[in-house]
Length: 148
Image (cartoon, rainbow, N blue to C red; front, side, top):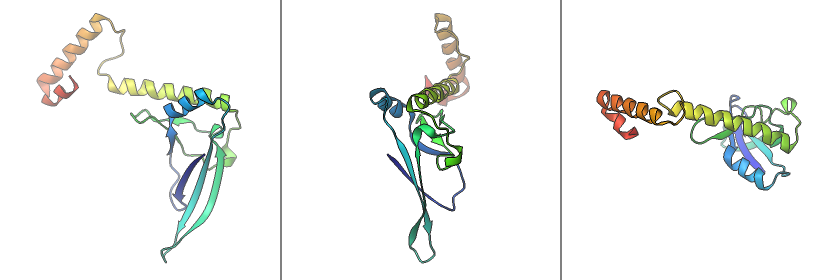
């Protein structure tokens, strides 16, 4: 079970739920496992005490907006993990398929963002072009040395 907490006054946004690659590793070993997201909304009062406003529990497999960030951390995110009406009732196996798709999209976006050139095959010509590009960067910006 993954437990989240949040203020009941906070705007709806995409929140990190878990590392996508760690979820996929877990599901490789435990294909039939059921993971639940439990979210507790907390009210903060002027007199410095807090109270529990709401509690939502949803199977991770039912998250309607499966998204993986293309940044290096590769977190699975959702903005609808508390919206039970939007839940997509799917099996764990169906969810794994969706998570793998989202993870592959993130990996491709990350690779595209990190490359200087369009993705060619990794032929000697590609490496030559990459070296020329880095040489150009070095001549125009000394900071490019760090990427060399």
